[in-house]
Image 1 (spheres, rainbow, N blue to C red):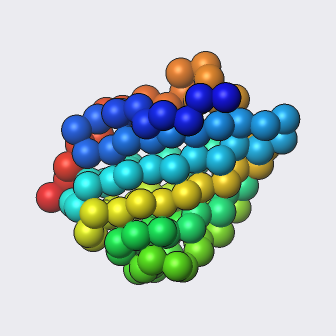
Image 2 (image 1 turned 60 degrees about the horizontal axis):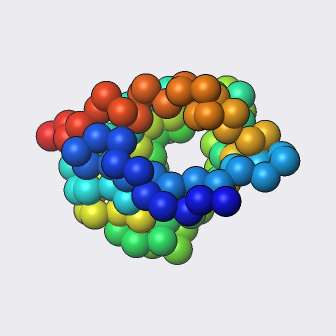
Image 3 (image 1 turned 135 degrees about the vertical axis):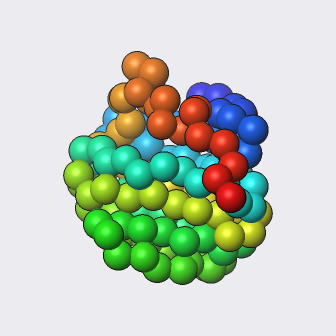
Length: 114
């Protein structure tokens, strides 16, 4: 299994690996970058390893710092803004087969949103 970072846009890098039933992803996001609002069928748990972010899940905004976790239910609209340089680990279930099919354009098109 590969575990190397891929640059998705000028402020966002991702690496991920999938098993049979889940996907583990790590993101490096530069301060000011926004992951635009989107939703997916996968349940998601996000762990902030470094930095601070503003997560908006189902219309509810929450500032999250290193060591904190966010739960995103399946189908819930959500977005993230990096308040500082940010490292986040996400676990998805079921696995993100949409990424394998190129269904990650929402990550590739959004640069800094200041």
